Image (cartoon, rainbow, N blue to C red; front, side, top):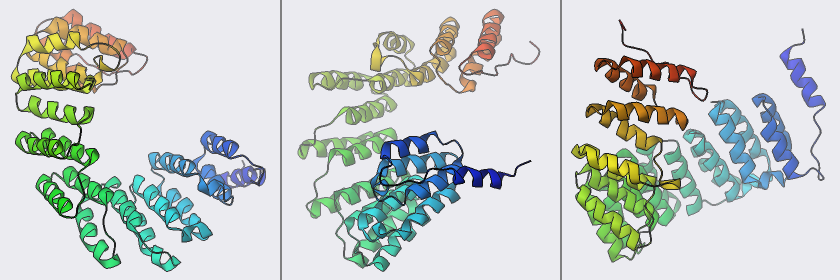
Length: 380
């Protein structure tokens, strides 16, 4: 039997060598269709010999994403470290790309190494490199490191942080739940003449309202008005969720009307927030009404809507509705956690609705899109 190494050797001995006439489109298609990840790595390294290939950031991102999904981190390191032999690495932009790719793969230590090597290549670090490193830190979920890097590196390298720098650090603080530190950073920005932008405000709104800190969220909302930062759908949705969590559905309804008057069309997330508010308040009739009337297209009930409503109607004893909603989940091919469906099965059995319970179990097992291993409670 032929060994794998021999097969791999034979594969590359017949692999057409890239040249000046090889189109980038054909190269991209070749890499996209390659199913062997080891072959993909070898082909990528070979194609990297072409300078015009090295200018295609999209191909780099697609390849790293594919390898990261398969958790082939050593091969990500292999193809990215291989790039350092080309003269492009002496340009800050190419190092920034490598840092970004390592960050998206969750390999922050490697991104940090690339950053530290920049001065060795007779290339000066600018705020762009700082932002790339901070971004890699956030993408790698190394949130604890962001603040230290942000305080240390600008002084050490004589770099002045810009709006993107602050946005990234604020995002890290919000991910950590350090909202007070994020708000303090806004004050620091204002002293430096950097005005808050919509991205940064939305980051704070999502963090504060999402944690139920409505009063703090309102302060950011007031700041936006003061600085003429116009809220978008993400801003309104963050506030809607905060009001829902705080059992302020009346104010949430008023906010939806405000959105409409300002030309911001509510979407599925907006309506889910309203429904969630009524669920928290225990208002079954309003939750059911909004579920039935949230519209079609982008606003139609989606997977998240069902995940909010199904447990609630079970709790309220609306078992016929729960049964119909589960059938709708199957019909729409939504991928939900099996525990959601099992909850309905268990509740149906508890209320002696065996026929409906058995029907759901059968539907789950026969479902072609995703088979759910539902079970009748023991003894049934």
